[in-house]
Image (cartoon, rainbow, N blue to C red):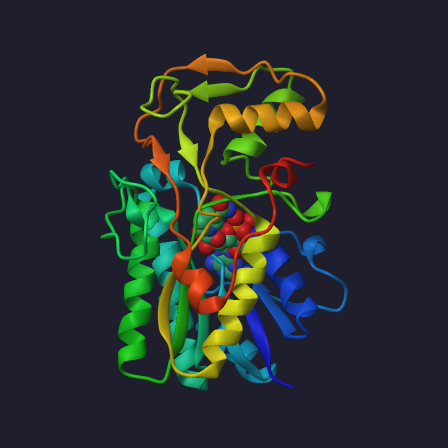
Length: 311
Ligand SMILES: NC(=O)c1ccc[n+]([C@@H]2O[C@H](COP(=O)([O-])OP(=O)(O)OC[C@H]3O[C@@H](n4cnc5c(N)ncnc54)[C@H](O)[C@@H]3O)[C@@H](O)[C@H]2O)c1
């Protein structure tokens, strides 16, 4: 029986993807260097190869030994602010990872690939919703590495039978069980809970944006919905040779004040959020157009903001 190699499968999103693949009856092997991943996130019985995606021999061995027919590539560094402070490390990590993987796939004849991309590739388009045809103009080294990864995949597919899908995630949130939550606190909801846990007031950065309540609007998507999109994408790459890019979001925005209200509702008291100055580089509104993924993969998000703020 063939199967999927999930790089970064011990991470926040990867652990959900592994579960969704198994629920869909797919065989899964994980490759993770455990730099930010946690082995305990993996369900019992999942083989975890502890190696880096920069290690070509280890990748080639994993692809060959486990009869893999496709890869879901999540392993990467993901913090936008960190990428601004350490751009070369991000270039080395993220581009080195995808290019080494493409080399290993070519060497072993593995032809299906689902790639973790990001809404960060769009930068700050002045309109919303954002379709996949919006010109990519990333504003951070992180977004640049994700876009260059897509280019590398296209270039490899042009000279091979590679069948690929790139999923551009919007704001990923929630967890399907408490042990699988995002611990990195780069995103709004974990940041609010981190503030509450240390007895501080969560901050709303910017309350004078041209939005209905003055705070920024983002498209939050539940990680379990996102994981199911990977299963659809993986199965789609297997049907024929493809090369497609899809946004993954709900198509509906929520403002920072609305997220604060949802968390207040969840914890049964007001979070007492305080208004702060705008942060540099936060566009007012980023919401996905999700028509393409609905039409082609038949996927749409089903979980709500209330599901995403649950701990
Ligand atoms: N979380 C988000 O909001 C978000 C949004 C858009 C895109 N993404 C992308 O989704 C992917 C997964 O993100 P996440 O939130 O689960 O992050 P995460 O840090 O929880 O997971 C990343 C996983 O990759 C592993 N890893 C990192 N470098 C590796 C390497 N060189 N070799 C092998 N394994 C390595 C880590 O140990 C970890 O298990 C990333 O590619 C990220 O850029 C995430």
